[in-house]
Image (cartoon, rainbow, N blue to C red):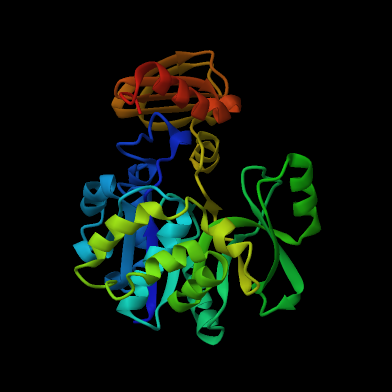
Length: 361
């Protein structure tokens, strides 16, 4: 297990969950399900039994360092990498890979977002262990976890499998990546049986992903190559603070995965959701009477169906005649919005910023 590493990416803002997820405390730091553990802590818990805690690394924005340290006291300061700027996932992954390779040239990495929900945790662990076994035998492979779809979903990207290049019952070569489709195309994808949802969970050897950056995103590789002697030393932070912000703002999917020829996908049924919106939260949450979801609040409700009632500090919510609404109260913000219009929340956030600055963000 000494060659197994995990990088938890926990620097996102999660604006679609506003007003609960705000820039000061994004959704990965929130206990959404009343378990006493935030999404970040749940991400840590599910991998700590299969990867040594000393090999778990959190990478986040400098702003969230206190929150990460508070929620993951098991990690030493050297296991928390602080980005000086938000530059999307490709620079984040590249830094983590150079850092991990300096610690262990034979390292294999699991790269996972901190804000996803995985209900079938034992199945997830089995898939990760199988992925590490695969990487031990296929040293140049880039592996991603693909989720078996149960509906035509327009909010996720899709991965087309190459059925003629099966490695085993769960791992196959990737034929194509497709960004979020419209509903008609999503139905075609699901009906074909050739497409999986793109989970954004990756596995590879540190050396393999660094080689892929050299091949497909040299702007990032060259920048980090300039300091490869400082990774894993006390000079690393200074180097990153100087160079990181100059990296292109690009995702790992665009920079590497969609361009590489040696990409594989492992299909998985792990009860996964990216928990990217209030609608996704509603879908995965236990339902009270009349399909209402309650989060950390007391309620007196009459003739209300299919709603989310969410608050902090056990606030009392009294409501009547609401069907399929989000009612979310967070300190000095109250959001009331039809669930069917949740895609407009980002627009509301922009309007709030334009009218009131950053006070409510």
